[in-house]
Amino acid sequence: MLEFIGVSKSFGAVTAVKNVSLRLEPGELMAILGPSGCGKTTLLRIAGGYDTPDSGTVRIGGRDLTRAAPEARQVGMVFQNYALFPHMTAAENVEFGLRMRRVPKPERARKAAEILSLAGLEGIGERKPAALSGGQQQRVALARALVIEPSLLLLDEPLANLDRNERLRMRGELRTLQRRLGIAAILVTHDQDDALALADRIAVMNAGVVEQVSTPGELQRNPASAFVAGFLGLAE
Image (cartoon, rainbow, N blue to C red):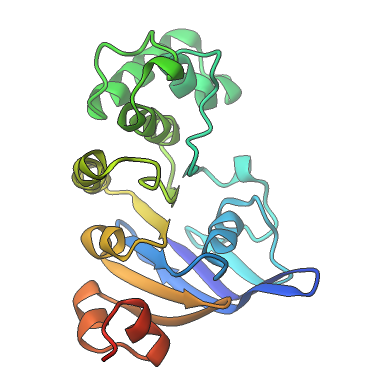
């Protein structure tokens, strides 16, 4: 579904991503896990077309989209701060991507209502973001990303701003929704509990390099480096 082939990206003298090659399978949820500054968000932005790599190739659905703009990728993105428009209602926020694609108003309203219901948000369509809880805002942001029927879902620390109870609830809801829709997704996080609970496979990054890609169980049983073991708290 998504391939990074030898992708590198620097900002001035700082190498954010160094020769990364990864493959995401259809329907898979992969977590990119690592400490702040390891390059995981840069890699996600490259997948979404918000940053362009200095070298390497990005393929989505078999197409080389390395230098394609975000709107040409049919990718849904959920940002850490949700990036909801404060002057719009929840329904208007969800419809925004459809409006940019010139979808007729009746169809926009129908699709928005469907995805809001699927996200458990019946009855809040006319509320503005300030009147929503953190969990509700997160669901609206997710619904906005999904309503365009993307081929790939990108999640940038989507649970970071939630309190513990809401975070645990949203883990389950996010995974259930992703599986129900069968959409491939990448989750960027520094929280290993989120990664272990949600991901089919986890890619651990350190200083711009992918140190290991494994299932959660294999990662815990056989960390490939001292960094991976230490980051997961497995080192003695």
